Image (cartoon, rainbow, N blue to C red; front, side):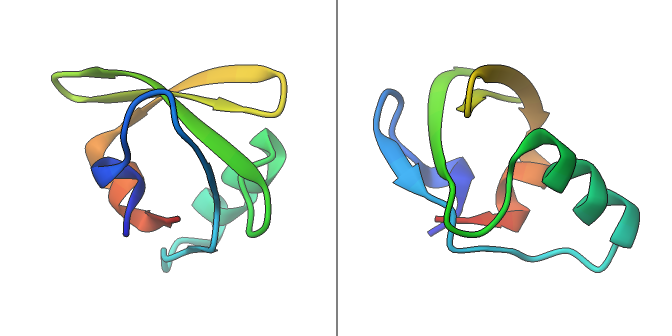
Length: 70
């Protein structure tokens, strides 16, 4: 299941990040978004969603949400 299909307010564990872009992998890792970490969809918007990772909240687009497997 991808993050795009996640239910708001439910905590999930990131299983994998599926992207071929090494810079994007490094960026997500710097946010704390990597395998084994909990992630929660706080709210949904037209172009993406707001997620809570560790102590931060981030707005990610739908394409990136598709790359995060939970």
